[in-house]
Length: 424
Image (cartoon, rainbow, N blue to C red; front, side):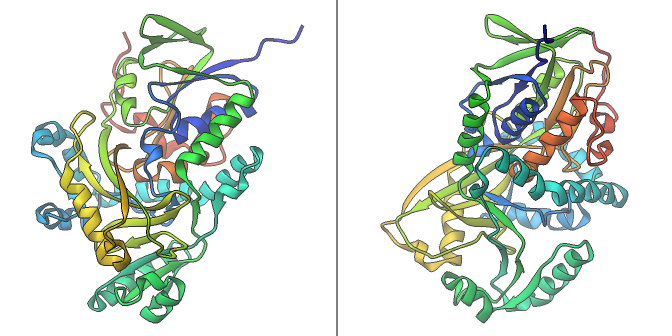
């Protein structure tokens, strides 16, 4: 008789969890996927659909800290600290400041670089496997400046990125207008990233991943996970009123991962960083690629469902309601960059979600130091979509006791000095 298939519970049905569930199936596991929401309805639902592989610098740096006060004081700035949550965010912010030390910035940059270098190839393997390769488009990306006075800044940024082997070229206003006529008259210059990719529609991508998972025999349980426990034989996943058992489990619960790790004796400095988006329908702009504003710090991207404007770094935890003026700011920035978006008949929908962010901007991709049947893949901050497929490959390699393709040391949970507590 053949041996029974190994079983694994994947906790979290966002894009990282979906990719992890599929990758585990490819390695011969029977997979149960668990989430309190429907697949793809968390942070994965609201991103810009852009694989931002050029973002190799951590969020915490000397440059960020120098500009933080100005960003906070700007009523339309990209950074917000709601007063009602400030006291709770201070310990995390202290760690964020400490992560700006040059040695840590260098470690974080290298960790991000190796994930981002491998990101597109991992997505191609994943989508080719499920017959959905058309969901990934090599669209290119424009990082734009409106102020001619900031041309030197764009030149310097381009030189810096090319130093790290990120292909880009500086374009003048005329060339930008040729590529994207909707930007004519507002953009002075831009950096063009010709190899950049986007997906056609983030939520549709998640639906396709989930459909492939179910077609391969995967089981989905829509219920909140209360806690986890593990011994040398199995993992027990406690839900409301019942317990599921599996040979192994992977926590891919995004901003909700901190509470689950705490139940296993590990404390991580994970913060729920809130992001906002506007989906815009009813006007033809002709945009063919994602556009990032270097000055306004937001991204607007063409998706199958229409245009989507995404922005803000707001440290407000998991329970505060969305702050309405953030949506007004996104409208203001969108209309300033693309005048056609001031059309009164424009239809808009609003959304706010939670990015899982650690102070050093690196994810946790690791196994529990005491309970090796428990593994982790979370904390990809603004790069969850970008890094989902490669994160899944890495964590499943660790779970399967195979040598991962990338050096896993930058993503260890024990890099936080007080992360490990005796498990009782």
